[in-house]
Image (cartoon, rainbow over all chains, first blue to last red; front, top):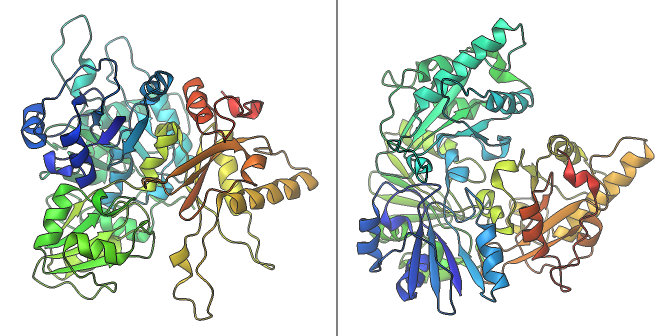
Length: 269
Length: 269
């Protein structure tokens, strides 16, 4: 049996009781460390699980093998390929689910039902400055839907042949890129899907002890510092009054009253 | 401190290790049983957690109190109101996340990033037959996005003054209602967003030992029997070849080769 076991998002104790029992009885345990990272290291996991963790997936065999995935096993990149290869080799599989960023973003009070397509924002270079994620956000905004923006994480730079320091995108960097796109589109005379005053939410290390949520206008988030990885961001669509009340909880050091909810485009009906 | 603790979707051992430790140290533990249900009863939870569970939320006080929510605490209905009331009373809160249907639907291989707005399907009566969920599905389909359809669950009929037997909507019933809407729209000469041949996925008891997934055309799902609650359904949008391969795993008793992937409208680019 090949077990896919979600680890949740925070530390070693975010594994489910069921998942921990299975890990401790498996003969081999693999850790997927490509699509996301926990806030604790591999060593902390190994000590808590009482198992050495193998970082590279080799072929699964007939004994029980666990494949550990930060968040939920099917939350980020698809592990379908591994499922299909296991089944083709006559190996059964089972999934132990857990929280992932795809559902925990609800912690800021934004209704999960009202999110549109998820968007991945990429690092710009001097010569490669794609704006396609803005167009996806626009589609969601046009329907009054929120957009979850996933930002690059450190491990994504692994496997490149040219050495690059591990880096992740901060909410501030993502906001800056969006501001530049807004200016580009304005210069072209386009009707904008959002403005500098659109309410956004920056989320950092969700599920960890030091998780940080910051709501504010896009302009405000461009200068926020939410600390270490992982970061993600929500571009709000139509906001329900209860969502506004929740977002005010996270509107910076000034407390509950500073969030500017003046952007009428947030109230698409 | 008021703790919001996700229970996951299956049985007592789907709580995280962190969540279980907190439950066992809290002075009072409340169970939210309105928006979803586990496949095990309240008694099984009480025995495993070593705590009596209070079904009705009374005011939180200054001792540690846990509020247990099936799935993720912010996965279904918003508990924002409770958060705001707690903070207004000077009570801090903390969220222990877990899996919810909003992220576990990925287990059938459908990419979570490619879902549009989530849709709630309601039970029709003789005189109340709303079709608005079809229009939401249409918006997603027009953009090539998948749609997660949440179906009514037994506990939603609680609180009504007139006695009705607890009931839940099956995937077959949801598919039948959609088929009728398609016929209505066809009769009116509308361009359809989907057909009887659109690839859909029925999901039952996700996360439980006896979880069942069935892929097929909408027409096929109208006669499927996936057993007890909870059911939910995916209306596919544009399908990636790897998604098709995964869906074929769940295409009924005939095995991997029967799923009709002939609906060209599934391949919107």
